Structure formats: structure tokens, C-alpha cells
Image (cartoon, rainbow, N blue to C red; front, side, top):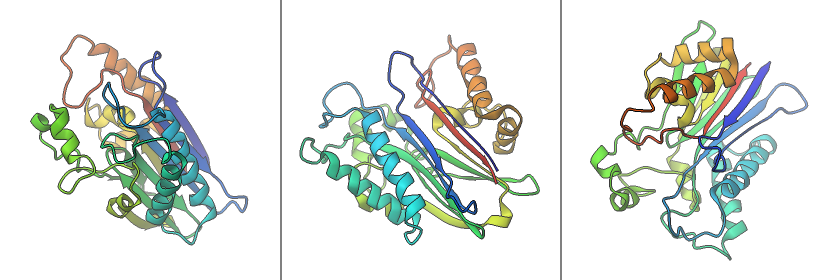
Length: 260
């Protein structure tokens, strides 16, 4: 097995809001990966005394522990319990009903000798590479379906955040776990996994430098840092062009790559 984790802040003057980790049980037959992309709130009050990295670390730690130790729970149940635990950690100090309460996108994968479970919530990406080299992207595209003119308005975007007909992230409501994209794949059908926050997946879905298969090829040859370095080079080259839809010039980027 080969595992790589890399994360890079988009702005050295701001804390990195991405979070990633892996768990490898002692038996050697299974494991889990977790990747979160914390949602940067706009300037102003968002009802919480804690910064987004605090939330991502709390939620991520709970997800990793539960994914590894509670094999009796589905990944949706793992996410629901992790959200519940994290909410209880700051319910007494913060307004968790605020639409911009700290939140994050989620990628989870868990495997044993027989199968691989996955869960994706919001716009981070999970890639599954088959033994013949084909790559399947597991995506939650609800945010991509929101029209650009809506995303240009903070109030209009907030009206669709964690709301019916809109898009969903892991915030304070455990019920959102039931809306995640989930599935199970036979272990024999997957030779590698990759989880990418949208700061890393932009190599494909923003810059169009290749498809998801090409992306896994970069990870295999150049590693997780190699992919992020390619993204940063593209961002620098485009420094004088207008920002495109939902684009920070430099976003936090995180990658987990696992060869099984």
C-alpha cells in the first residue's frame, strides 16, 4: 500500500481550512480516509466564536475515529454522529442556527478486504481507479447546478445553503448526512483512491489540463504535492485574468492519494 497526504494554504496570511487524514487498522486489511474543505465565511458575524479550522479539526477527528472504530455504522451514520459531536462541542457558546455557522465539504472512504464504501458531500471529489486504469469520479454536483447569477449574491446563496433545492455541507444538522452521495464498490475493482478538495481538483474542473484519469496519472507519477504544484503554477500564470465563477485566485488545496 502507498499513501500520500498533502495540503497547502491558498494564502500564507490566512489559516488553512482544509483537513485530511488516514487511518490504517493494525490488522492491515482495512483503512479509512477523510478529507474536509472548510467553507470560508464572508467577512462579518457568522454566529460562532470559533474559526473554521477549529471546526474542521473537530469534525475531521470525529470522522476519522468513528470510521475506523465503528465498522457497524454506515458512512452516512458516521457523518451524522460526527456532526452531532462537533455541534455539542460549541452549542453553548455559538449560534448553530446561523446559516453561515462553520461548515465543510466532506469526502470519506473506508475499505476492508472485500469492499470500499464512499461518501461525498458538496464539491470535493473522490476518484476511484480500476485495475484496468479507468477512473470514476464520485461527485456531489448540487452546488454546480446553482446559476452563476445566484452565486454572485450572498443573500441568494445563503437562501440555498443547506436548504431544499440548494446545496448541502456538513454544518450543525446531522440530518444532512442522509443527503450525501454514497456507495459501495468491490475492493477487487479498485486499485487506487484519491480525495481532492476543490482547490486541487481545479486542475481538471477549472483549468481543463486533463481528465480525471490524467489527474490520477499525475498523482501516481508526481505525488500529491506534484498535483498541487501544478495547480499553483497555473494560478500564477493566470494572475492577470478576471476571476471566474466561484474562484478564489489561490484556494486551500488538499489531496489524499492511496494505492491499495
